[in-house]
View: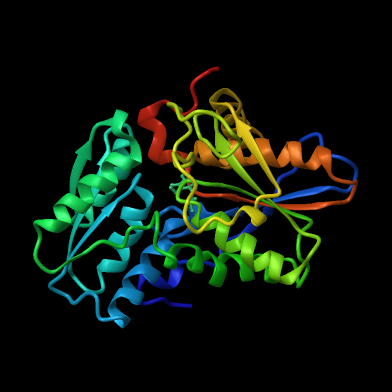
Length: 306
Ligand code: PMP
């Protein structure tokens, strides 16, 4: 098969059973490997959908400037999608996020504006909105509030999971929340297909879903400062709050034992999936998501001893 554009490589990622860990008899933990998208993360799915929708709704044209606050992966996803249209891009990225992701956004032609780490994603959102007020013909997708974000995962990732399982709805779905788009879209879809499915969310310490105070964390890509507007409480059957130490421990284990070079949000998701496995009956099927790869975090010493 010959493909004509990287956009054809988005989605249909592998679902891999993660073997070699202590789980009840017959229980399976299965992970969607989103690093196999061409931009290296789950957010390629979103980039395409955001621009396509904006075009269809007449919000943008090829002369537009896209301005978006991002931890990096969404910027890369939008950057890939924008190749088709050739528009300008400005991404607002809090300083703490990995340099590799910023390099990849730049090579796709984006301008990066950094905001102070202490101001969090909120600071990046405010800065993006301020830039939007002073830029002609611009469009801000605003993934943190745009319903196209969960819709993307409702339309792509969720049906893929059921199709990968030959029509079976898993007993439990475990996913990290940054914008909350992945979790919300898949949780809604699975709950529509099964009343029994548990949908559980993963966050680092320093995120507020489990009732904790906002604070700093090193696990990159997940953690929320406020409840995402599209995340309905009825979808959250449980919150697992995973420490950086545990997230990084499993990130390394997944490389050493399973040959998976995944980012720390994948390590956190796997730590939560292991806890979920212990709380469910033997023979359960748990699906989780590994959002990106580790190579974009090597400068941040992702495999450090802890
Ligand atoms: N992990 C990584 C590495 C990410 O970049 C993101 C997106 N910020 C997530 C997890 C969380 O995805 P979502 O925004 O859909 O909650």
